[in-house]
Length: 244
Length: 336
Ligand SMILES: Nc1ncnc2c1ncn2[C@@H]1O[C@H](COP(=O)(O)OP(=O)(O)OP(=O)(O)O)[C@@H](O)[C@H]1O
Ligand SMILES: [Mg+2]
Image (tube, rainbow over all chains, first blue to last red; front, top):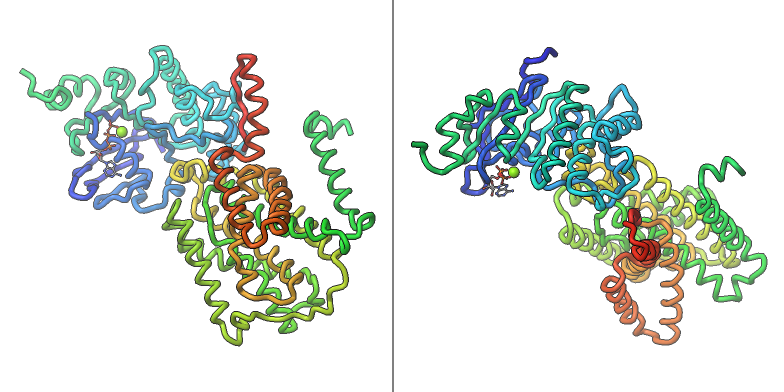
């Protein structure tokens, strides 16, 4: 696969919870090696999109293709094996297990690969700089380290697409800097694609090749960061009133 | 010796020494203590039967986090499977026949797999617990109402003339309990154990990290049923007269749970300590409180859950942390 080829394609995806339409006719695309941001106000449906891609939720209609193959309806572990990894907005590492065992679990069960699960665990821990804390129980990590741990768990399955759900939320400025450095270095080495949900808009705008904006479950913009930043519809969604 | 030291470290070597010494003492016990005359023989026999069931429950509930309340059904199924095969002349020696005992484990394991595929895919938490309990009661009723096939409420009789001494019971139960403990220990330290613990911690997260959650839940459930059935077959050999009220008794559900919880859920030594203590308590409870002793056991369950949810092993592992807190350092270890 060459950089720029379509990797993940969402086509007319719909999801409702009871009477509430949470995702409305959503078209979205992530290409090989691309970093795509997804922004939008609280409750816009961003996390729901991740849950649909990873099959935690079933979609009502539409299609989700990964490398041209329909993945909607596959069980979550199969989606992981195909090469999609994710982190959670509220960290969902295995709290009573050690850092090493957390990553090892993801490595062992993340599908068959050339490298052994031991090698993948080590390399993932190195990439996020958590080797020195390998024996620490996840529950005893700081929030920032837990986020790094979840990223390491994602990397252990050698994904070609990694979904990050607000990895910066709640971190201090220094921790954010560190996380950026780690993600940049990792991306440099592994060449995967990233779909990145973030609330801190400026952070995403600097980093992404392209940004999609969700509002009430519908896509209201999808363009390069500079264009999105001055799109009146986006400004309205964020400020709640039309720009004058 | 040096290589062993390097592998196990100081603590590991001491633990290994204690285990070897304890096994040697227990294994040779019938040579220096008359297990037929002394109550100790029966006490250790029944403790080992309980421990085998308890390690099975520990695997599905302690390590995998799925609170099953169907253990007594698997125990009874194991006992009846053994007896049914014996009566029909299937097997080699019938009395403590290894093939019969293994089949007595496999039969409930198959039932557990079917129940597991139905329930574990749909139910979680309390619903799963009630679902397994309900199915277990259905199995019990089927055996009571089974007419000629199961012997109904009167049950079935085996040839009691095979009984010669408690010795063979003691050794078989001890061997099976040791093997069950060893098997659960090895399983939980393997990559299989990683999947079980991940499911216990967060099954959705486990699934999105590639774990086939249903498969591992069903496997753990089947293995726990296997151990319960195996223990049931040993107890069946002891009873010679099997009736639903004794082998499907709810005690085979609650006592192993109490043993695991008291000792430390999700630890390997916890159930061993718990079963030794609980069997002793039940024995004395029977002597001093007679028919009231289930009240006493129930009270004990409530006390343990309220005041030491981590069990005895939880207290043991907390001790060094409390110590370190005094010195101002952060604890980094909890039980598995
Ligand atoms: N399992 C669910 N059941 C019912 N409603 C849900 C469920 N999950 C999400 N929703 C609703 O869907 C909408 C979108 O939620 P979602 O979590 O996707 O938003 P978000 O864009 O990630 O918001 P935030 O920025 O706050 O994380 C919200 O109104 C939410 O209440
Ligand atoms: Mg969200």
